[in-house]
Image 1 (cartoon, rainbow, N blue to C red):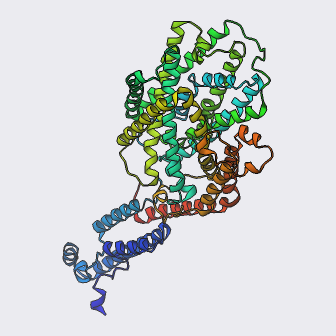
Image 2 (cartoon, helix red, strand yellow):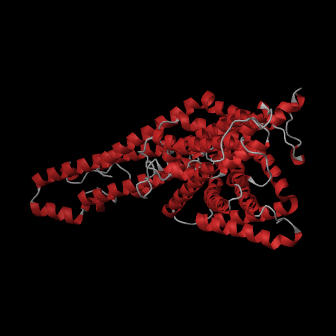
Image 3 (cartoon, rainbow, N blue to C red):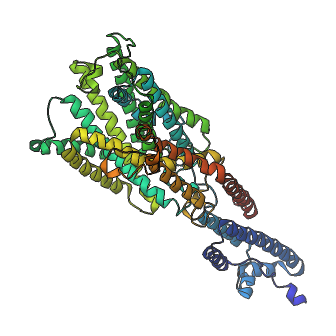
Length: 588
């Protein structure tokens, strides 16, 4: 009995090797992060108990043996030799605590650290989106609405409806980006599941490529056509010049897209400022000739106005919804969500709707012409036309660079690990080739018609995804558990069958109610074909709106308990992590 009392206490906790085996076994059985944390917590408590018992044993030995014998025991650490396990004297306990903390970090139970960038404020969201909305593009939208023979009131209705709904979607996406440091398409896994997100991700990447192509084409059609409207670039003898123009646009955009975050933010700020100043200049010049509301647009059609609003929704909203969080990921988690939404809404709603409405009022006082939208505002002034072309070039190049950056981040959402630079170049080359072939075979008028038709068809699955994503973000109240976004056994699971089914159902309904004039999409409208008012569905483009509305409802009706449970588990993990740190005595 006396001999046994001279031996150090038998350790209750597992050694590092044994603990690793237990954790790996739990992982193989898909036990989840919560179970692994429970194992870690239990072992931490056992190690604390071992440490206390060892200290008590040392105190008893100091009473029974001489100081020399105690020193021998301490130096030789005979207890480790007898049992073959760490008895965790003071130095070893410190090492074990460090090892435990490293294991906890490997499991990534705490949210990812905020990016080490300059102090990015919520106002940065204004400058990010001003590149697009503060440019001459809203004037181009006003010019396009005039071509539809709408009344001024109907045109204003189209702008407000299309732009405001778009702004709401993108502002919600910015809030999601603020909660994490991940791209939009990875955050989408919280709504669809890690593997369930693959199906919508593929179509969203195709959408990103389509809009990149559209921007390359716009760079030619809006800039070159306005500058040289009297020349026919699309001809057999000018293929080399066409290729040179498109190549120049694409190469410059690739260079901009490969700049660093700080430099690119300043490029966005400069581009937005130039666009806004140019817009104000052209407005003042056009307004100097007088403003009246003569209603020269014609009798118009409210149904056609609704269809125009849907197209604006696709161009301003759905084209960027899958990238809405990408440019907010540098914000700190502590930034208030309402500030992010407010600055985003200012840039995405107030600015473009004001510019577009001003353009509608100005164009209502002018005669129709086919000279290009820049000449509608700048007249025959060479200096103002030059300023407009320069501003458009800068805006489109920056916007194209933004699209290329976002596209390069999208590939990772379904498992393709591609270097961003290579992804940017590959996307740009694909868009360049398709733009050249499209202009060659269809000409500028045909390309515009095809872009409009395809934007609606591609927009339906994006609208269905956007509805689910927006609802999911608005229901959540805490930050994402980022490690679970990359682990199928995490809180967000492999597949969220409710949301995936809801997305597929919304796409099915949307395509069934959408009509298209393009021959390759004549199979669409398989539900509206049975309606007596097929023209209503053809002009209204309501299939896209209904797809968005249906998908909005699925997380609200079926997802709230699931989301609240996920958040409760995340909070529980955080509480246990803090307790674990206290037990181990490890500081942040």
